Image 1 (cartoon, rainbow, N blue to C red):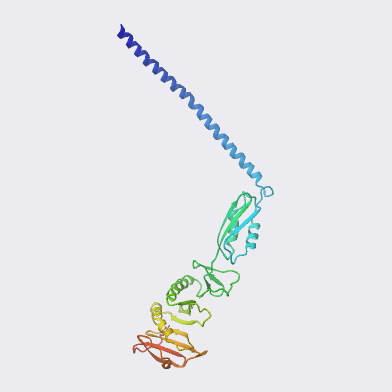
Image 2: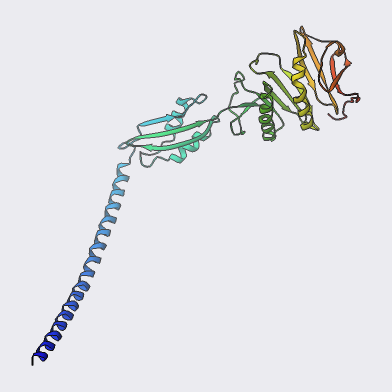
Length: 315
């Protein structure tokens, strides 16, 4: 009998536990719809709140109620008039703080020739922050433009020729070629303590440059004629002989022109006491690897060995 009672008790316990578990699952099933309803209700309330706030902002963003009251212009501006910038911004504010068209303001400011880049943002509670990156002129381009730090040409209404900038000249569309060659010449001449103050590429695609000794910007420049052909070879020859040419000058003597447009040598025109010198044989120049000979009364010519020098047909 005791065994039967024990068995019945165990069976009854399992039935009660199963019944309790089933009841708990039924309660969870009834709870789930309630949570879903509450979540949906919360989302609906949030959406209504957003729509309401949006409508309120539109009603508040009337220029008379929430206008743009302050404009801050930032940037290292040397050539741009801040007053002109302020006027352009003010003329393009067509709404209140929240609806003012920042893209339109930026577009109008980009039209200024001295502006390289612009960033415009709102500044709470009633201001605009305008950051301007100004063009940095590194050289003149022809007579009416500049070249900036990226090698791009920009053309303001007027060009200030009093700036201490090198002059670059060339045909339209050749600015990249001239700028790249200028950068190379600048590095090469700096190693010899010279500055390049002018570089020309003419319509025939012939190169010519002017240099001065570093720190002597007011000195008379030396003109170097490289011509159209074998530019690299001529440039290297010039770099090789320039130090010796400078060392062998007589007192008061200055080099006016060095013409590299020869297959095996070069011609040097000297200036002495404001007049051109009259003969190489009296110059006393000693350039390793070269001998000297008279070309004419206005020029001096250096030759390699005994090879005769003839002017190229198209230099």
